[in-house]
Image 1 (cartoon, one colour):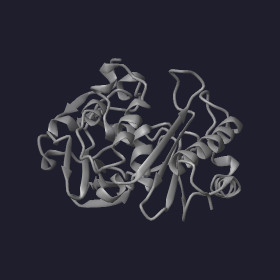
Image 2 (cartoon, helix red, strand yellow):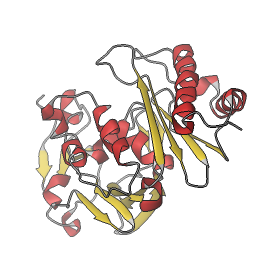
Image 3 (cartoon, one colour):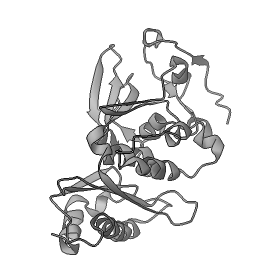
Length: 276
């Protein structure tokens, strides 16, 4: 879609060339959402792809992703065999049901910043303890847990003039066992609930709930919970008002499938083992 309100497109080559933020500015990464509908208040685009960030880096301390890393680049990564959570990356990429054109354009940072409840990069980052690197308007930099980045539908933690530079996923999180479950109202529909479970070597279990809720929710257990403990924890952490309500699923349905998928994840992580 043509954005006929845009008067200027800036293509900075370095951080020093980033403009002072003003009303009507918008950052452009992939643009798959930005160009999908009218942006009536947008007057200037700041093209982050011109900064030339390397899309990803694998190191002893984990995986670093630039905000401009595309879904296609992320999905093609060849990760160390010891990283048991590696399949989760492809599963989350495929939760964005788009064409190859979308996959080669949509970015990790754009998906996170858009802050849709169903954003699969939100789920991935929250489940694997990712931390966000944020460039502040005054030239400083701050670090924020990905769990705290999405505040609600279309609301993120960026302050005026701030830019999401990238994500870092620690090695420890990438070595956990994982289980992934997703459901939607139609085979090619937006996620109505997306849950990820992780199991540490110590036996500790974490359950991350997204899509069904307005912001990510994380539940922690010392071991595999039984049905009653799991249901009690979900009810305590997710009040009815926190379940998302839109055309992709009503709150009562989302609440029901959250419990169902949570039990499936618990069973998958336990592989028939005992529950606490």
